[in-house]
Amino acid sequence: MENVRTELRLRPIVARTEKRAGKMNQASWKPSAWKFLRAARRTLVAQFKLHPDQKLKYVIETAIFFLTAWLRPRVSEQIYRAREAECKTCPIYDQEYETCGLPPVGCGCHQVTRAKLQVNCWLYTKTNGKEGWPSELNSFPLGDHS
Image (cartoon, rainbow, N blue to C red; front, side, top):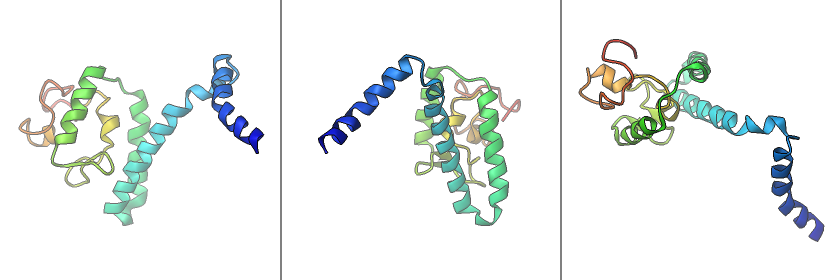
């Protein structure tokens, strides 16, 4: 029994040592990929809750959003943090699923991911700049991009 406890305590230390030695080449991508997949799952659960009959549509839309998110340019960490703070005070922000509301009120995107991309706030675009992220936090002038 004592050997099992010792082995369990040493596993994280051994894993870190092997990673540093380059023996675990794939370990570097796993945390961010898993976090990304959990965000996609959370967004899908929110969409399914609202529209259980349109699951295939939302699976495709969410897959396209998250796949293109890997390719899109990112904003600075300072802008990202400011956007995240604005989202959390927004009246349509869904705190349970971390989404921009649920359609038709909000785009339904995972806000933690969307705030990192060069995009405009959904509410800012729909209200012509009266609500949503302030204009300095949006990536494009009104009417140029979504």
